[in-house]
Length: 123
Image 1 (tube, rainbow, N blue to C red):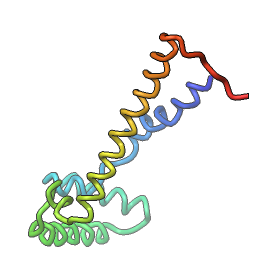
Image 2: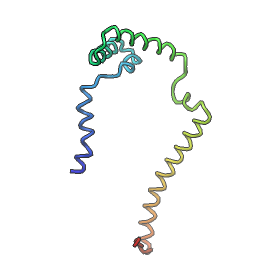
Image 3: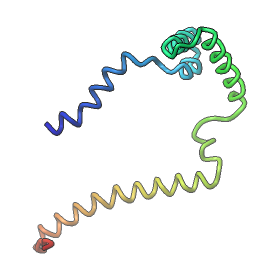
Image 4: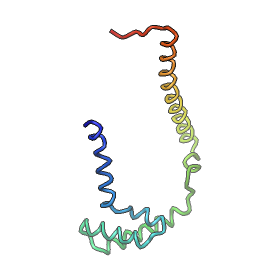
């Protein structure tokens, strides 16, 4: 029963997948202009705004895309700042060490029991 309760959000996600429309921003960035316009119009209808609001939002998307095309994107842009790069690398190293240490701790405990070291329980 516990595992079924844990799976409930995944079932809700699968049901919502068909109902929730794709993001107009994603559709616009993918070059699917007509679908972006339809998604914006559907959202404006749902929120009781007119189709003129959808046109205005689509124009704003066009202007934002033109402004963003001048800037570099990707992972290298993220690591361009020294402080962000150092933090990212340190957190990655910390994650790797924690993952490795957890496995090593489990393995060394079992290995010590196999070689005769006794188990001690906290009382």
